[in-house]
Amino acid sequence: MSVIDEVKQRLDIVDVVASYVPDLKKAGRNFKAICPFHAEKTPSFFVFPERQSWHCFGACGTGGDAFSFVMKKEGVDFGEALRILAQKAGVALSPPERSEAQQQSQKLKELNEAAAQYYHHLLLNSSVAQQARDYLARRGVSEKAIEDFQLGFSPPEWEALRGQMARHGYSDSDLLAAGLLVEKEQGGAYDRFRNRLMFPIRSSDGRVMGFGARALDDSLPKYTNSPQTAIFDKSSVLYGVDRARSAIRKEDLAIVVEGYMDVVMAHQHGFSNVVASLGTALTEKQVGAIKKLTRNITLALDADAAGQMAMLRGQEVISQTFSQPSSVAGWTDVRYENPYNARWKVVILPQGKDPDEIIREGPEEWQRLVDGATPVIDYVFQVVASKVDLAELDGKSAAVDQLLPIVSEIKDPVSQAHYLQKLSRLVGVNERDLASALSRVRARSRARQRDPVQPSTLVSSLQAKDPLADYCLSLLVRYPELRRCSEELSADLFPHSESRQLLLAWRECGDCDSIRTKLDPALREYLDSLTAKPLPPMTETQREEAMTDCIYRLRQRWLRDMKAKEEALISDMQCGDAAELDEVQRLALEINVQLRQAFLHKQKRTRSSEVGA
Image (cartoon, rainbow, N blue to C red; front, side, top):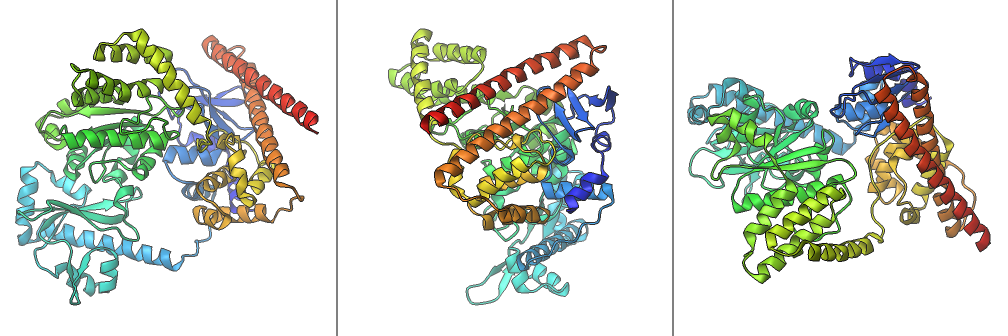
């Protein structure tokens, strides 16, 4: 028995979910509650003890086992969920063997933590840090905020940190690897940060990965960061995410600003779901970190031209991270809607003011701006209109060229009609003519979408272990050419967390060796068992047919499982709430339609194969 199986055997999913959802109540053979992952009034979240699974039949539409629940609720990966559940189950996990690189990474984290403590001590106690303390006082930063964010001060001497860390046993090579020293051309090294206010930059688990530093004199640049190191990548870190995680999950919203002081001041005044992007543009890695916590992002950047472009670049990255890459090219690459219910908005700040200043002058004004955030598509309309001369034919054409493809991406017909009418008013062109042009844009988009695209990585409901899933994954990890015929393979079709995580790792890699590096050590044994599983000799065509058959069988099984769950709920609700019963019956009808479509599609494929034979 693997450690994963042992954890599953010892835990009951009802107990796991109840520890996070206090209002979980028995409903017939199952349990129900208000969904912990989205706002609702009528309970649509159900736990099924017999199947050891959960599912939301409301807006989320997601489900899974105990592992997937903890991953979604805590915003952690599979390995961390395993550690959380193993502790609950009283199962001891063997400490993972650390490679040389992992040992070096641990050492750099410990070194950064020691440096952060040193800088913080100087800020609080050293006479040379008076200028930094005066600066923070002028900016209205409280003593508690200084402690919470462990703000510090780097002294003006060239080798102050170097000498301090040497006394703690760290060598120059360690400090250079951490980016805390700069190497001289003629030999030797000196402190990278001098006479600056220091902002430790932490990962989501609270470990110091690097530093941001603000000059306290006329030195340039005014702000600087640690260089890229083995543990610090500016493009993948969000300042304040370690302190904002809980608030982001609770409020189901992340507000992204630019500056360190913006984050400090926001948290000081109770706006704890605010993080900073360490620059002017969000990156895919940063959005990926937010995606683990919420699908709702509000961008709050400076109102100048650079801030506008950063805003647009940020929403493009959000679009690409939450959904398929858009078929609309250019900097106005916007998806108004996507299959994962992600929503992003824009806070338009008053000219010349940043969030820090607005919050200090009046927290209620900041709250008003956030509450009145503009949907990103409306913001793009505003920016495009400001960049062209709408009194001239060329300007009108440019606006239509940039905005009509965005309108074509809107799936809801009412919303699409609204924005088509808005574009018509903006450029003074007949709405009927724009609708004709919209049809041509859609046709081009459909032509592009015929090309193979990366399948969705949305995690959804899973059930118990199944040889079918193992067989499917054995084919995938052994025959890389099957990637092209597995577009319809969705993670929600897989029965347990191990297979789902392996599928997600497979999508990011090209071979077994690369997949292993993506997996938690507890899952590598599962991968080894799949690669060792004997498979019959098959031609390339036979392998593709086997994969296609796996996908349809997995899909049919998932639909049947959903139908069984809904029938159980209907049976339990016969004497219950009429509104809840109607909703579940409606969902059951939808599942019936999908099952019929899957069955007919399978029959059609079978007949085609027989004719071909």
